[in-house]
Length: 395
Ligand code: ATP
Ligand code: MG
Figure 1 (cartoon, protein in one colour):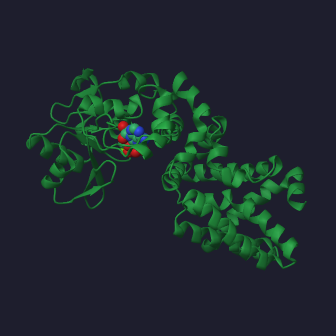
Figure 2 (cartoon, protein in one colour):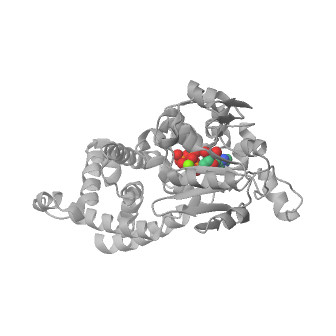
Figure 3 (cartoon, protein in one colour):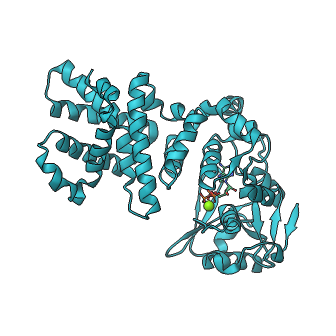
């Protein structure tokens, strides 16, 4: 472990949330160890504004709760304290120790153990163990509010300087414990413009199918962080490159042949580029827009299939198709209800634009309620401008 003294780094106290400082000081006053850790320290060293401030301490969740009235304990496997303030929530986690296998039901353990999935997380430990349990070296720096020094257990400072994304420990073991780490590696490499260390990188394509073991709600959250934060297009390309894309989007992508996948991929790429531009300009983005585009062609192609098979009109077929595709998607990806509702609205309006006279286009262009539908219409038209792609649809 090395200690970087106050003089040797650029983190100043006034960049840190006042609420986080208050919590750290109260924990110290009560005799506990407490540090600012994770993305907060990483981003301050890099010179970015942290998204949130995470704290780590040797106080147990119940001890934390006793010190703060505005505290809620969350999580089953590993309890974490959330300290709630008007404008922010600060996450305080107790140092994690290594897992012990004793208390786990043998049968369940055996099955999951074979897959290498981390089963038991709620073991408290020392700061050294906590450091080993974290994901990346750059996320494992502990900032001490009392003397403003940083503790570096795994070479995080050096990796930040060299712009390297490196998993702590043996990559294969760490990905098996928690496959979401593959997505985090990709996210940080794109978000922070850093290079992925050789072994950290090599293990991803090999273990990509483990991503299927991630609960769908967690996957949905991670995907939004990855695709809807201003670097979606690049992240999408990396998901493809590391063989993760087809696993994650097994639905819709695996249901179709190469040509249709090309259609789906082209539309998604256009929407991601469009969203990234809007994000840079700090414009509002409806999170449902991307999902409406990801699922547009599966929905559309299915509509045409139903229309032909049942010999009914487009509108009737569309209603059946819409329900079917959204049910399937919300099951596979845990898309929240309000997003599903929004996708339906976008699709209905996109159909309205597509199947009405060109005259209405001018009016709709300026109508805020049609904003996403109009954009989807324009982008899919751009996709279909390519003659070869258009042929695929008309078949
Ligand atoms: P950001 O908040 O900017 O997205 P972050 O690194 O702070 O990035 P959080 O999800 O807030 O990400 O997690 C806080 C810290 O918890 C991380 O920096 C890391 O040390 C640890 N952590 C998060 N997810 C994992 C994981 N899957 N495995 C191991 N450690 C993790
Ligand atoms: Mg964070």
